[in-house]
Amino acid sequence: MQITRPKVRFRPALVLHSQVSGRERWHVGAIEDRPRLAAAIELVLRSEEGILDARANPLTGRVLVYYRPGRLSEPIETLLHRALGFGAMSREEFSGIQSSRPGNPFRHLLAAEIGCTALKVISLGGYCPLALGAAVLLLFMHRRSEHGFPEARILLDAAGIEAD
Image (tube, rainbow, N blue to C red):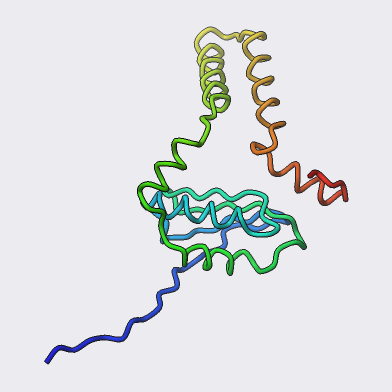
C-alpha cells in the first residue's frame, strides 16, 4: 500500500524591505539563484497596469518595483504572488530575452571613470577636470533616458504632469 500526500499549494514568503510612494523593494526568496524565474517576474510585473518598471535580482532575491500611485489594480504583494504563479521561463524564452536586452555601457564606463579618478586623487593628489566632466555627462545622459530613470516619471506623476 502506497501513501500519497495531498498537494499543498506553496505561497513563497515575501518581505517588504522599503516602501515610498511609487517604489517598493521586496525580498522574494524564491528567486534566489533562479535567473529564469526572476526574468519571468520582471516580465509579468511590467505588463501590469500602473507598473512603470520592475527589476528582479536573482543574486540577492530582491525585487524593485516602480509604479504609479493610485493606478494599481491590486497591491504589489498580490501582483508578486501572481507573477510567481506563472513559474520560470523556459531556457529558449530566457535566452531570447537575454540576447534582446541592450547592454548598458554608460554604467560600466561611469564606474570605470569614477574608479580611475579616485585612484588619481589618492595616488597623485589631483584629478582631471575633463575626465570628471565626461563622467558627469555620462551620468546625466543615463539619468535622462526614459528607461534608466523611472523615478522621473513618478515625480512628474506626483506633480500632475502626464509623461506619456
